[in-house]
Image (cartoon, rainbow, N blue to C red):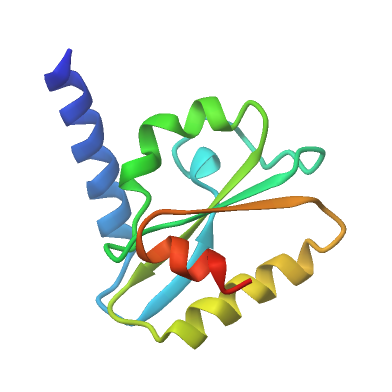
Length: 119
């Protein structure tokens, strides 16, 4: 069973890494759509914005995405390179301003928690 989860994590990591260029890049992704678990975001649900740690990917939360997607419209802040904190905050603010009519929750892991606390 452990090997199965290791393979799932490796596949998820390869998908994430292959989608990034080696630039200072910040984006808000919709992992459930990108991984084919749902067809489109459900705007009737509150947003759960997951802010990744310094590694900048959603690998650590990937096994919980499907369960979280039952109650939330899960989005992930993803980073590559070494973007500035201001760039990261601006990306989050821009996204949340576009969705200002919706309730949202911020969840952060490690460095992502520091970003979430800036709000």
